[in-house]
Length: 207
Figure (cartoon, helix red, strand yellow):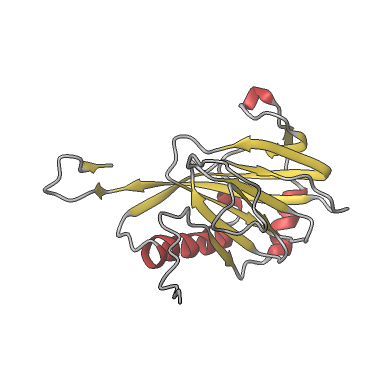
C-alpha cells in the first residue's frame, strides 16, 4: 500500500500578500486629484487599454503613512518569509488607474530587486496575473489547475488595503477590470543597499 510522505513545492516564486491599516480613503482622495498619463507602448508596455500612470515616481512622498506600512510589509517579507538579512531602500513609487474594462499588458520591473503593489480599494473583479519564470514541459491538460501544475496564477484583490510583494523579474499583468469601479493601485520598487553577500565571498559587494 502506498504512503505519501511529502509533496514538496520546491523553488517557489513567493508572493507576500498583506492587509495594511492605511487610511485608504485618504489615499483615494490623493489619487483622484492626481494628474494621469495614458499608458502606451512608448513606455515599453504592450496591449494596454484604459490604463493610466501617475505623473511622478515618488508617490510615497504624498503618503508617508502608506510608505511606513509598505516598509513594514517589506521588512516581514525579507526577514520573516525569506529569512534574509539584506537591508534595502525603496527607489520609486507610482500610481496607476484602470477604468472599467481597462487592462495592462504583461511586464516586469527591470533594474529592481523586489516590487510591491498596494490597492486602497478592493473588488472581486480586480485581478492581477503572475507568470511562472520557469520553463515547463506540456504533456496534457490537468484535470484541475493547482499551485503545483500552473504556469500562471490569478490573484483577486478582494479586500481594501491589500499589498502584494514579489520578485521584480516575475512577469505580471493587470487583467481586465470587470467591475464598474476605477481600479487604483500604487506600485513601488525595492533595491538592496549596504554590504551584500558574505565577506569571504568573491561575489560580495557594497551598494
